[in-house]
Amino acid sequence: MTRLEVNENLALQRRTWVFERAGWVLLAALIAAAALGVFGGGWLAHRRAASPDGSLVVEYERFTRVRSPERLRVRLADVHAADERLRLVMDAAYLERVNVKSATPEPERVELGAGRVTYVFAVDGSSGPAAVTFEVEGERAGTAHGKIALGDAEARFEQFFFP
Image 1 (tube, rainbow, N blue to C red):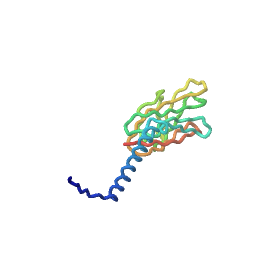
Image 2 (image 1 turned 60 degrees about the vertical axis):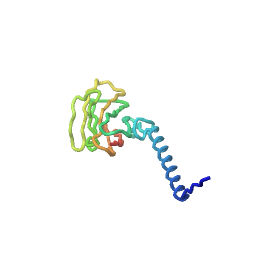
Image 3 (image 1 turned 30 degrees about the vertical axis):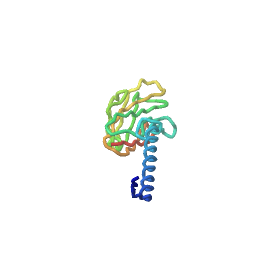
Image 4 (image 1 turned 90 degrees about the vertical axis):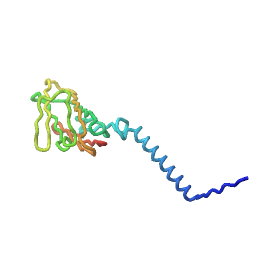
């Protein structure tokens, strides 16, 4: 009978097991994060930002990808437009990070101002709830801080764009 001599290094084997288990934990954490929406399209990704009085609400995806179309839905609780114009103001700092592809309904005009862009929409004169949807795409990776306002009502939000 022949005997095999095997060199064992138990300390190395234990370190390998520790790294293997740490890898499994990391993999499980990544899978859980993806399932919850950290990488977009899930429970943690969908967010709402509202003005303090609740009259202006922005619904958006917190996590998304660069160059991936994303919707910002702006809900207005009660629209009172004296001159039959609705003026939604977007912060220029946010618009430097994203590209607005479209707005539904289509704005009557877009006005550029110091540090802001104003989207002017025609309204029919009646009061009540209204909604505007902007389709945006992130221009570069990182966090974009946004602000949308209608008169004194203002909602602030953040989006993170993955590369």
